[in-house]
Image (cartoon, rainbow, N blue to C red; front, side):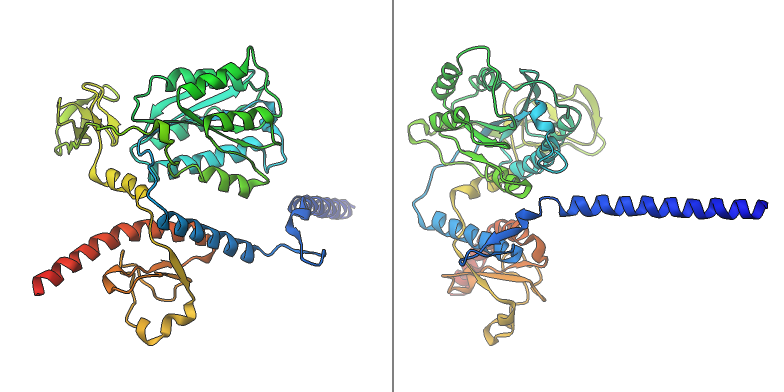
Length: 428
């Protein structure tokens, strides 16, 4: 009798587990198949066909190459190397909408983190600050600074959505800070706006004119639909306005703001800026850090003017106000003024051609070219000293990895080309 009852209970538990598994599987399938219409595209004959991701990525890759070619062939464009960027995040209740998975707020936070790291990689002399909008009020989350980790840590600690959004309050707060920036710095604002309305306490048109007068460049990326006031703001201040279609499109739009924009002719003023190149502190030395006002052992840099100690570069000395940088920071900022030459794609099948068999490593950075997924060479490179090979061993991240290598190899290419040229002169 007892055995029969135990057997029935065991069978009942197995049936319950199977039902739960079916429900879990259905939930996963429904989540994976949701918004499946976005994976379809219309061909020339009007028929719906599955989206070809490979062709889409290749078209995007070719578009990046064309933009690089256009930039390198055109006249030199003046760009600001020292940027002061305020990122405004709309954390009103509209950011909790789940049309972006898992939510708009989560997608924005994830991509802002990637953008901050990419921004400082391309603009090491620039600074970023974060501002949030919630409950109709704008809050300063972080001050202008050059530490990506501090910004990311502060952002992840304040991810809460509530209330309405106020575009005017955000612009007023940012204008108050950017109006004090020196004239040599580029004043920029990037607004990530989720709401379809703005609840403002006054005339926002006057605020927009104040921003224009202060030479602030305001750009907006919308996550809902196009808004007239956002478009008008960007038109008046010379910024860019765009609306994200999905998560991947939003990531592409926000990363377009990482390189410095062209300087406006009427605002482009040449300035000489004093900079210091500090030395690393001696091992085992103890001194008080001017950044955190704490005693530090060994780590840090010594200001060449006042001998104060700072933790990281680039930064501004808290004692004498001197801008402290290192030579790699200047080199990484300087390459925006001289775009790399246009590239042509070389198929892997051409790797075994007689004139390419000896090229086993990248000429610029010495990366191995064994079994590469993508090879790129300079289209007009006839002199071996100016050849540049770039490898991408992971085709999934072709765009990101390839163009990262292109930046690194360009710097290495210049150094090696000058070295070979000097050697050739010595042998003559």
